[in-house]
Structure formats: C-alpha cells, structure tokens
Length: 541
Image (tube, rainbow, N blue to C red; front, side, top):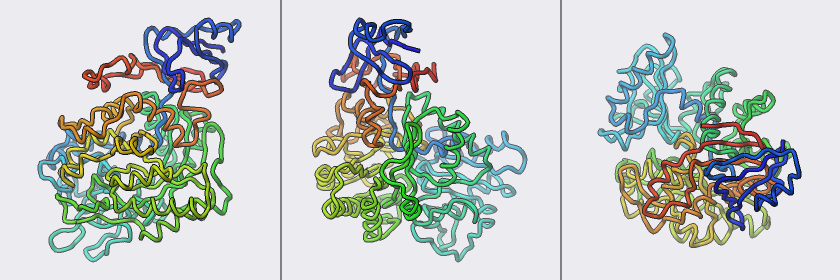
C-alpha cells in the first residue's frame, strides 16, 4: 500500500533537515519533499497518513542492547532505586515478589545499586537468607556484572569457603575471607551449570539458563520495550548460542519486530573465523559481522579499571578480563579477519590496550571500512579521546547512566573524575562519532531520556556532571539515529529519512527542536505515539 506521511514536523536527520511530506511505497521510502511532489511520485491509489501536528523521525537505532536480558529482568522483581533504597527495602521487595510465584520456584530480582543503599554496601547471602533459606534467592546488580545468592544457592552451585577467585572475576568475601554471596563477573559462570553458557574470562554471564518457551518469553517481553520506545534497529551486543537460537526462531515464527545486528561474544572468535563469517552476513533483519570483547568490568559495581581508584571500595583499580597483550592479540586477530569489534571498557586503564590494538591493526593491515567501537567509554582521559578520533574509533556511551547512576559515580571516583563521565563534549571536540545507546536493561530503552541527559548532564538527584561535556540537541538526535546506524553498519537502510531506505519511523507527540534550552527538562516528557517498521504501524500508544 502506498502511503504519504504529512501534517506534522518531519525530521529527516539528513541534509534537508525537515520536509513537508514523505512517500512510502511498500516498505521503502520512495520520495520526500513537498506534499505536491510526493503526490506526483505516488500517482494514485495512495493513503494520506495525517500526523496531526506530531513529529515524524527515523526509527531510533540502539547500538548497545541486551534484548533477552531486558525481558528476563523485567520478569524478575524490580530492585531499582528509589523503590529499593536499603537492604530492608530489598528484602521486602523480594518477599512480595515471592508471593506471585509458584511454591518452590527460585526468587529472583534485578536492578539493585549498592551505592544508592543507605548501607552503601553489596547485599550478602545472610541478607538474602531473610527472604528464604529453603528456596533459591538470586539478585542481579543493575550493571549485570554481579549476582548475589542466598546460602542455599551459593552452596548448591559448588562455592565453598576455600573456593578461589576465577580468572576475570571474584567473590565477595567476609572478614575471614570466605565467599559471602556476591559473584562478580566471570564468577557468575557458577550459576549457569555445566550445560549452560559459560563465557569464562570473556565477559559477565548474563545468560541464565531456562526452558525454550521461557527464553522466547524473555525475548518478546524485552522486544516490547524497544517497540514502544520507537526503536526499530538494535545491536544485541552479547550473542551466544542461547540468544542466536531464540532470534532465529522469532524470525521464523514472525515474532521479530525490529532489525538486529548480532555481536558474538569473543569466546566464539575462533569458531566465527573458522565458519567464514566476515564483516556482513545476513539480511535486512538479522546480521552478524562483529565480535564483542571485554576489557574491564563494571564502573557501577566498582570493578572497572580506573587509574584514580575508588573512594568507596577496598579495590583500588578494579581488574581486566584479559592481560593487555592478550586483548591486543584478540582485537588485531578479529580486525585481520575482517570482523568489526566492539569492546567494553569503562576505566581509562582498560581503554589503553584497545586504542593501542586498533592503532596497530590499522597500521599493519589498513581497513578503512572497519567499525571498531569502545562500549560505554565512561572515563577515558582527554588524550585517549583525541587518539580515538584520530584512528576512527566509535565511542558508544549511555548518557542515561549519567542521569540514573551519576551520583553513585561521584561517590565512587570523586567529582573531579566523575564530571567527565561519558564525555560527549570531548568526543565532539576530537572528531569521534557521537553515538547514543541504552545498554538495556541497565537503563530502560527511552531515547528522549538519554537525549535529555546528554544535553543537560543532570543526574537523578538534580546535580550537573560536567556541563562542558554537553552537546547540542540536534547532535544528540542524530546520535540516536543516523550516527547510531553507522555504528551498526546499517546507515544504508536506517537512521535517516532518505529515498531508498526502509520505512522505519518513530512518531513523537511533539517536536523536540521546538524546545528552547531552558525548556530541555521537557525532553523527558516527550513520548512515542507510534512506531512504524517496514512501512507498517506496529505500535500506537
């Protein structure tokens, strides 16, 4: 069916900025410009889609997501701040959630942030034993880099008083050095069992085993959040066999409602190379061409490798998943096999080997089309950002974390360091591409909230972290559309309203660019009225 969209603001994210009308023929954009020009292009038998004063934009592109993990965490108990602001709150929330479960089913929750607890500490197995000593109790930190177990679960997964820390992770321990509940990073492999996904020192284990039916339910629940947020293209940044099988099944069953780049976790690097995957494999719906690496751990959990250390933790610098030389070898190997790379790094000490590896790879084996990214890129130095711009590395931050967790980052590393958390201003100054993302479920997908955080630098408590690191509203909108599409190598079909691209749109209830700077707090109140994918409406508020 031919459609002409008109009657509101149409932001193209292209050189023409805004147009009066867009003509869609089937699932592609066929013309844009004046209403008359679009009518002439359509000729006859077209439908007018009246925007009724609303704002049409390209469908948002989220280049750092965990869709199935998002669904999983939304099914579990909500332990986020301010609902849960103390250990007692956490225990009570889990007890209430347990009332909704069948007898004997594990009690699970997601989203706690120890820095927002009045106790300012991680929960322990003794705390969770207050919820139940008879059934398993498991909670996941908001970063995904830490789980905490009650005593029954801790013992049944094989953790004893003398179990040593695994490579790429650690246990929380009591005053006598015995594991006391928290599992950091690779220690979470204990939760997956022998038949589950076990990344080892290649990343935190967020792949909790479940039945095939429940895995699909996780995906459908998670996907719904993206659809309602006007997000039509995502990057699943931690692909394992569990996710791949689910996404393929969703596509085959007609359940897939967004386009997906899928980034295999780096423990599959040799398998991907042997199978012959390279920079682009797939179609307009599912593609593979990138590998996800981890350099350090979590800034929010206090395990990222920050040179200045932590003010609220016994750890000084955090730790890395690999030695610097191992990580460099892995990244260069991926580059030389024409695989794009995305590498998690929050601390400056974790970013240095990534930048060095990409500099070396491009010098030894130039590949101008390569997309090499640093995910989160929370606390780089200014000199590191300059080098990132020179070698073409994409930083992929999540400014909504500044809003939700910025106050905790100040507690962790101090204001002098925290003011440059997610330094968008530096990225723009030194020519590094401006890209925004959600890292859902660490934040709930909401591009307008992320854009608000990006242009105001405000935290949930009303503080401003480094006003000089803010960027313009137009830059922020492009960072969640056309620039994000470039980061996932989909700018030929997504990210802007241009002839030949897919008809993927978000309809906002009003135009963000109509707001004056003093009104930017209103950005958080702009909502998605409709989402269109492949020329069809898939969501209406």
